[in-house]
Length: 119
Image 1 (cartoon, rainbow, N blue to C red):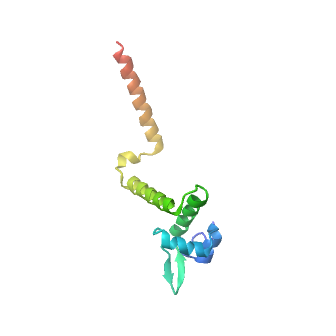
Image 2 (image 1 turned 180 degrees about the horizontal axis):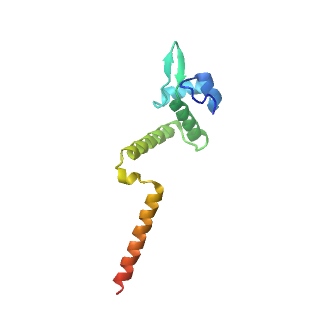
Image 3 (image 1 turned 90 degrees about the vertical axis):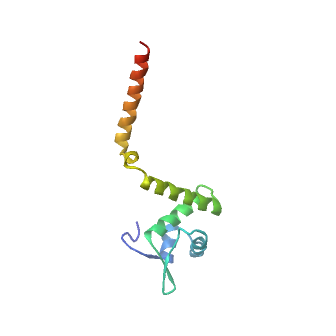
């Protein structure tokens, strides 16, 4: 990835990395509260998080056919999902392999129960 390890990117760099024109980035900044570049000496400095958000917005608009309002709603929905996953109890955040084992055990127990009910 270009500039890997950098903390801040100027608008021209973000434009080159994402393929989004600077004037579009400025417009998106006014439309999407998730994009919050830091301003220093009249320069917009985008963080890695802003860069990822710009890429996600670009994907939603150009690949998935969302409108600006639809993309706003989708980003909010995704943020809520991430917050819910981060704050969920430990038992729901089991590694996938443990979840699969538990699912299999439950299925087998249900099958055993079904067989026992036949007698």
